[in-house]
Image 1 (cartoon, helix red, strand yellow):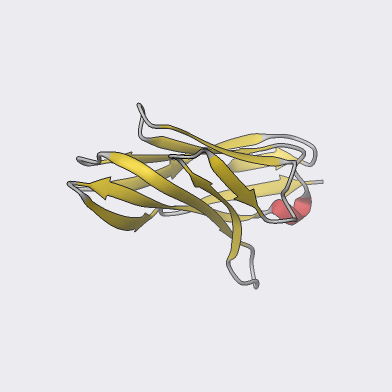
Image 2: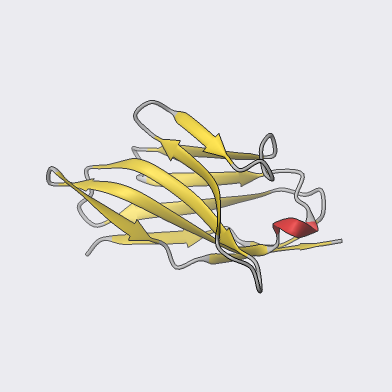
Amino acid sequence: QVQLVESGGGLVQAGGSLRLSCAASGGIDSINVVHWYRQAPGKQRELVGTLITGSGRTTYADSVKARFTISSNNAKMTAYLQMDSLKRADTAVYYCTAELQISRRVYIYWGQGTQVTVSS
């Protein structure tokens, strides 16, 4: 059974750092693309950033540029969202979604979400 499991959320003070993980399992050949989204209470879901693993190309929302970094480790079938210089405005539930290569086909999966709370 294919799964995408997130971890690493929690409570952190403003200015601090957290690293979220997004681990894929279940007969996956590779992670092709990773997107990280977030949704704050009362707000629409926002695309935080994207990583195309083959090229290493990343794009980020202006609100997180130069503070957040997306990376991946294909050997571990895991993607990461490194969040530095956190602000209260970064408080949200963070979701990863990935395009997974499985037996020559590509499938899109979502993680369950992980809460990040930034305190002042």
